[in-house]
Image (cartoon, rainbow, N blue to C red):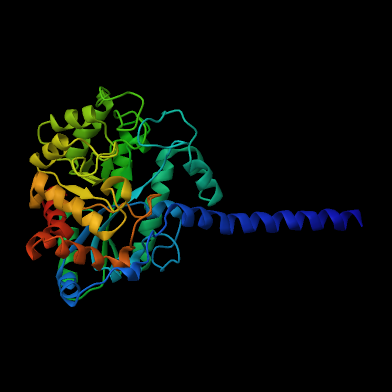
Amino acid sequence: MFKRIILGLLMLVLLAAAAFFTFAPAYVERGLNPITADQDAWPVSDRARELHKTLVIGDWHADSLLWDRNLLKRADRGQTDIPRLIEGNVAVQVFTTVTKSPRGQNYDQNSTDAPDNITPLFMGQLRPIKSWFSLRERALVQARDLERMAAHAPETLQIIRSAEDLRALLEARATGAKRLGAIVGTEGGHPLEGDLANLDVLYDAGFRLIGLTHFFDNELGGSLHGQGGEGSGLTEFGRQVIDGMMQRRMIIDLAHAGPQTVRDVLAIEGARPILSHTGIQGQCNTHRNLPDDLVKAIVAKGGVVGIGYWSDVVCGDSPAAIAAAIKAAIALVGEDGVSLGSDYDGSVGVPFDAAHLVVLTQALIDAGLSDQQIAKVMGGNMMRYLSETL
């Protein structure tokens, strides 16, 4: 009898654990990545639908790999996956790997030593044990997941590592292929773990974009949200990483970088950084958005800025609010310097998912942008930058 009771209790524990690991991560994602509006509430004209079909669309930032979903399958949670991106007519999506996020994360100030939110998420998702204890392994696991998806469905998903890869993708799409190009990046350079040799490790694993910092100061430099303050700039290690990235024709992303870090990067000869997901401070005055003069300086160096979709950067929760931020960006830096950086699946709420991206085309028409301006913002500027940089 006693043995049967013990076995029964053990079975209950195992069932409870199985239920937790099956349902808890999905529950967390649903709470952190909501669609904040009725997507069918945004009317779309025939003109917008026809224009949208002609666009070559690109997006600089999505954190979908963090959530351990098979992105080849349409999900009932989150904001994007491959089927929804293809339905939205997206040609190129940058998928970033998130590896560390401080407990109590905020836009003002975070400690590098704060407890980490991503470690328990990786444990709860039963990701490989090595990734529980190494930020480098955490990034590599996410990149390998995307690589496996591309190998499983090469006609649907293609990893972009070079300008030649991009050209082949766009040529295939021009002949009717329903294929998404994916660029692998990392949100923050801390997966390098302070070792320059790891830049080769990431590059060989397909990484072509590195955001220098995330919500905290790291070995590369000061964050917009770190403890070092505005005077905390690029470190000597950070300068070595920038040099190595430029030699490898990798994309330098200044999203989340502190003002002095931005200035230090801009002072490096030949550096051509981007700002992947942001708003315009002059239009939406929040600490998440860099000062307008720095945004202008990034574009003046040949970079582009990607406008995000969430209210903290555009000060509104509608396609019209995103269009207003894009219009403000064009007024600030010109129509050749503006692109999209949704921050899909990045623990933010957005008013529409990737499948409903046509509502943004409608909002840009309503905001008075010309068809040529819309084509540039929705992807033309991003494709030009990638073809010249990769």
